[in-house]
Amino acid sequence: MSSSADRERAYSLNYLGANLGLVLAPTLGGLLFAQHLNLAFLINAVSTFCSTVLIFFFIRDTRPTQDASPVSHYEAEHQGSTWQVLRRGKVLWLFLICSAVGEAVYSQFNFLLPLNMEQLYGQQGAVWFGMLTSVNATVVILCTPLLTARFGRLRDTAKLLAGEVFIALGFGFYIFVQGFIPLYFVAMVVFTLGEIFTTLGRQPYLTRRIPASHRGRLTSITLVGGMLCQGVALKVGGALADGTPLLLVWGLVVAVAAAVAAGYALLRRADRRAFPLLYK
Image (cartoon, rainbow, N blue to C red):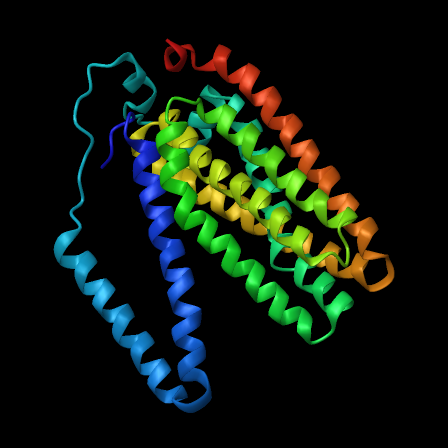
């Protein structure tokens, strides 16, 4: 279990590993899909089994050590319910709402962007979207360690705010660069920087402000809320894309992203009052 001081580095390492898999898996899967589909399923099953074995033998269930730092006051175990924890830290509700709506905005990367590419370039749009996805993964791999080291002292709330601003700017680019391919990649780099900042801020923010005994439950609430908002966003986005110009839909997405950024700005101010020990 990571300490509060090392939490950004722990989550950035986990995020980096996931994206390394994201780069390699589609490439290997694509090579096997055409000629060796059965082998692809077999390799997938074997890799899943191996990962389960590694977790079983090498990952131990640990408990946090006693930390003399006053920051650990917020992570001390709590005997009450999850509802009581949320009532005790009401500012967490603002975080949960912003996080869930932010996930809805992020989901448009894999929904609205490929639709836009298909509308502009037909079947070739899938090729361009694949290249943009590769740029996304490459920037994550190259920049996550650099941003983790460079902005390690930046507050969680500042990272969340910066991340959502970059995401809004990245998506906003697509309103103005239709048909100009080089700028698509610039927009993707900006968007990916926002993704990195948001990832580095979100989980450390939550875990530093809730009891360790409730960390799994509140993390699951965050994930469920994000998935629900993603589902609603995809449904609404699909309905709008059927009868509305995509530029207007992009504008709506950017407006929602700006609203999330405004919410994180409010969170940044309220958080200092709610959790003062984290700012000493």
